[in-house]
Image 1 (cartoon, rainbow, N blue to C red):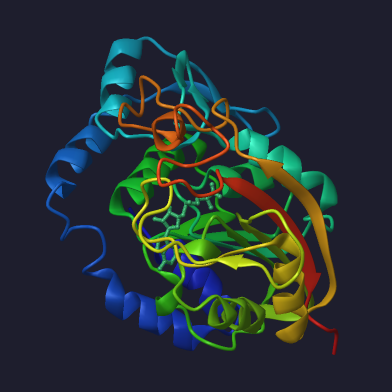
Image 2 (image 1 turned 180 degrees about the vertical axis):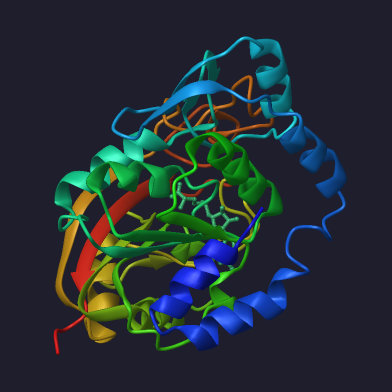
Length: 319
Ligand SMILES: C[S@@+](CC[C@H](N)C(=O)[O-])C[C@H]1O[C@@H](n2cnc3c(N)ncnc32)[C@H](O)[C@@H]1O
């Protein structure tokens, strides 16, 4: 894991202050986690592959390669389980992740401003699946931030083969980002807002990362209904402990306008299916099906409306 190319890039962009802050923090990144020794052993066991070609335009982020030792490859990748976001095809190993994250990307991509030459930030990016799919659109720079140590190591496993210089992951949370960057052309917050205790602060923070005229892509859990409706689960939601606010998509529009975004629109709203999120060989814990009411799958096991998601786009006003 080497963050120096990212820090060098930030210095060249006159973001020296941020680069210095990251450099000071980086000594403690990843290594403190109790499972780090086991995961880093898996990472180091990844075999070299020959004649690599990467594909980012397919549902599975793909590394085409000649592979002599696919058992070693499979075992090393399995050492980094659970794989939640994907899918990936690495030589002849197909990583069937818990999420068909390509379904979400298909709901998002057709509506976005062209990503070519953009500087992009993806908050809570998991192992970087969507960041990698963005590379098919030739952005200038993609930064994902993700506090989970395992998901960062999965990204580094992929980067061993991809070696792409325009994409970077930082093992930090949104609370570790500098305020008022005013620098990114596109900011993605997908699957994050409902985990925030203060969603309005989250929206202001996203806006502060964007350059004037930049685009926000916000994807989150919603409930059906008109503006003014918000579900605050009294306890768990679909077995998750940390779900705070689930507004209707029209209420989200109102929040975004109130925070000063313009050109706010809902471009997709759909129920999450058990085809999109399910247990697999690569993620063997319980998944969506076990979180829904058995008699009535329109409800969660807690009796709340079953997961439904919206994609909203909005802009920060121009200069
Ligand atoms: C539901 S997942 C969404 C992943 C991906 N963006 C997607 O849409 O498929 C939420 C992600 O946010 C990450 N996360 C949790 N706390 C965070 C924080 N404080 N800042 C940024 N990301 C966070 C989680 O580790 C997780 O990977």
